[in-house]
Structures are given as C-alpha cells and as structure tokens.
Image 1 (tube, rainbow, N blue to C red):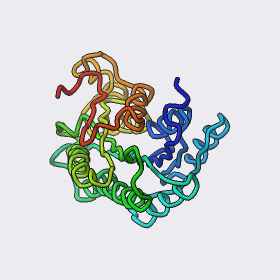
Image 2: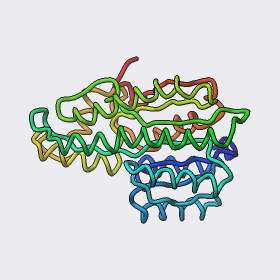
Image 3: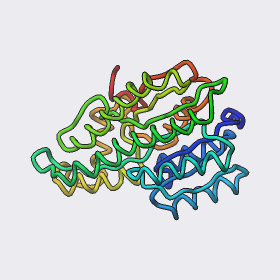
Image 4: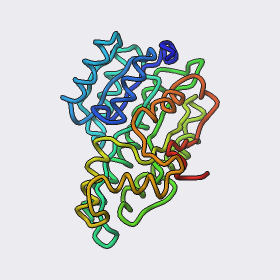
Amino acid sequence: MDTTRLQGKNIMITGAARGMGAAIAEHYAAQGAKICVADVNLEGCNEVVARINASGGESIAAKVDVTKRDQVKTAVEATAKAFGSINVMLNNAGVNKPLMFLDITEENWQHIMDINALGTLIGMQEAAKQMIKQGKQSEPYKIINVGSILSRQAFDDVVPYACSKHAVLAMINGGAKALAAENITVNGYGPGVVRTELWEQLDKDLVAIGKFEKEGQSMDQLAEDMILLKRYSYPEDVVGTASFLASGESDYMTGQLIMIDGGMIMQ
C-alpha cells in the first residue's frame, strides 16, 4: 500500500462508524489522509478513531445526523478547523428497509429518502460551501457520493431505496455541473451486494417479508444468479476505488458513477 497516496487530503466521511464507511476511513488514513469519522453512532465513531490513531493516523469523531443541516455544517467546520481545511467529502451514510411494492408506506419512503437522498444533498452543499470559502487550490476539491447498483435499476422489494440511489446519481450529475466552476469535482461509486452489517440486517428483513426462505439465501442467490464473478463482495473490495476517487489520480473526472458490483450492471 502507498502510505502517501492521500497525503494532504482532509476528509469527512458520513456513516463511518461501521461497515464500508469504517473500512474506507481506515484505508484512507493508512494512505496518509486525515479523517473526520462522522455518524449518528458516536460510540462507533470513537472506536474507528481509536483504531486509526493507534495505527499512527490522525482522525476525529463527530456525531452527525445527516438529515440535520446544522449538525452537518458543524462537523464540516470542525473538520476544517482540526486539519486546516476540508478538501474531500464522502457522503456514505445510508439505510434500507425492504418492503414489497404494495406494502410501501409513507413512513418507510420518507425515512429512506431523508437519509439517503436529502442527507447526501445536505452533505454536498455544506462541504461545497466550506470548500468555496477556503478559496481555490491547485488541485480540485472532491465530493464523493455512494450510489448503488440500484442507481441504475430497481427491484420490487426495495423501490424507495432504488429511488434514493437514483437521486444520488442525479446529484452526482447535477452537482458536477453546478460546482465545476468552483474547482470541485463530484463523482461516486456504486457497490452491489456487500457483506456488511447493513446487508446482514437486510438479509433478515428479506426473509421477514417472504422474499427468501432462510437467512443467507439472499446474498448466495444473488451471487449465483446475477453477479458475473459469482461471489458477493466485502468492504475490502470497495476501498480501492474509493481511494482512487479521493486521490489526485481522478482529478480529471467529474459527474461519474463507477460500479463496483462484480459485473451486475453493464454500462
């Protein structure tokens, strides 16, 4: 691993207390970045920070509900104050709660859309405002959004989630156009089936609504039926692309969503 690849990058990551967010936070830090680990779960944030700092990295924790603009703004400002600036924002926070199409409720819809779509919009806006305030730098500032295979299709049991991830893709495209003049790029990556705490719970929920008969079946069946590489992924399969998007190697990219799905979606 190149321990200097992200040197000079001051990065805030939402939803970073566990799963992909935590894995990426630690991977970024190991490559020289300074990290604000942000999540509604402050205890989890502190655990990630402790691991990063014990390994020689530099990080801080921030308790953030991404649907609350004042909390996001405060965390962005804290990142800039702690590290001197913020030059990368990773909007990773997300939730899912599957329901079959005719069973979707307003509460289910609003909860998912608030965190995944509105939370991403607020994160993009507050990070961009801080970056603009800091003034232009020689290399671009970067906003990275986490999309999904469901940014490009939908299944009948996760329609609100698919809608929220289609919205994330729209914000990548629209944000790239809106912020290019400010020397801010906007890109994202779209994971497929990733074995994290989120998918473990999703697997249980899919059994509960009758989509699958037993726990573990969803990931195994999707791997067999839809993934060309015939296996589901782990956070370690995602961190390399996330690092590329945070690094100078992606400076001439904007408005793009890169799929990391083992061949589920062909673009």
